[in-house]
Image 1 (cartoon, rainbow, N blue to C red):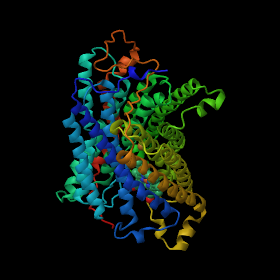
Image 2: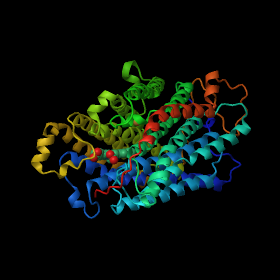
Image 3: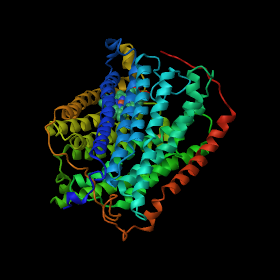
Image 4: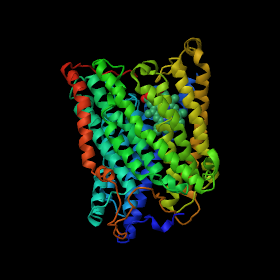
Length: 578
Ligand code: HEM
Ligand code: CU
């Protein structure tokens, strides 16, 4: 048993109550804004699932939505950018602040919020007036309004702002704890934000040098291939910016929530260091079907891409073993008894374990996408969205829901209005997303295209083209309907608890203890000079070294591919197809 009071869960006493209250309020603002974006995105998602099942809801939705593609742009942007960015930029500042016992720089954190909020409003405006149905990848020469591109620019810029806040908190902590190893949650948050700060250079270059001035009419044409390359320099790492915050919770909190310990602190650090280094160089694997670079490079990319699977496999084993350890402590016996013995009645625990289970399908389909030859079969089919709904649509979305189940009571001092409804929402999300993803990946194998308003086709054309895939497409629609139910059950719990939850003592942040790592220490805990840490852990703590390696690997992977593109510039005028 681990005593609750040995773990840091409060800001330093020197902080005034007002500063502590502001920190909580700001975290709550990030959380509410993020989940409000998901509310919009998750309302539209099932319409798309129905589309693939042959049901065209869109004529009934005018003038709210003019087309399927306007809805799809809103869905991708709200879920993929706004939801994930707000929750992550809250969490990866708040959790380290609590772990270190150091208050974050509130001005910088508020600026981060404000920049992203203005960006989100600009993008929402541009999507709502149907000027910018360019989808979340905004590939030129499709051309949207300046509000869209400037909004995305601000969102991207704001999302990197936690990096200086984290560096500052870590520096403050270090002044008080010289020679000690960065505590785990802070380490994971910092490597995530460093990775994302580097990755952001790609899309920032695309936006600032090309799309922003182009949308204003300052330049007349843009090069589609160069811009796609810059986009995916950020667009592949974004999948780690989606996953790593969920891993922070799995490694840093879940073991405690289930009543055990993290089985290996060093494994968590190695995972995050590897994710940081591998995330950037492989972005061009999203361009397997694009012209212009050699087969040799495509082969190298496959190998590099497969290496990114390593840290995720390490995560599966480390988290799996930590859960088993807790299950056995709780009296679980035999091969599966430990699994049943986990505290399934806690919606936060259930959501995270179920999320991890869906990730098996996510990882397996990801390996298909990352293999050049197999990719040719599934490219631009529903297989692709099938894949990423069992990654970002489950791992990230469900883990963020899980976090909200303890964080709302923690921040507001109000209990969940209903644990049963919370449990119902996560189980329904799990079942719905699994059925949906099986349907999408399976339909993709019949060549059903992604991003296609198939339900608007004449009935017999739809059947002639996609009749063979009618069973998987029915699964897609059924999964979508379940997801509607799941998301509204979740939002009832989330918003209901914030507004009407019964008052109760706020629970602490459930920081886990771990084996094999440095004892975690807040700024004002007793000195810890004899801290045991292996040479590897000490080396990994040099985050600037990791940064240097990442930069070199990225340059090595990108210069040979970008160089020829820069010598064969295409000048494409903008297209507006809606
Ligand atoms: C695309 C359904 C939740 C992110 C799609 C597509 C469908 C769909 C059917 C493919 C549309 C097409 O290719 O034409 C759903 C349903 C959801 C859901 C039923 C349940 C509420 C989410 C979540 C996220 C997400 C939680 C991320 C956090 C995306 C993204 C796309 C997408 C980024 C790509 C859009 C594009 O191709 O431009 N969704 N989705 N979705 N979804 Fe979801
Ligand atoms: Cu990728």
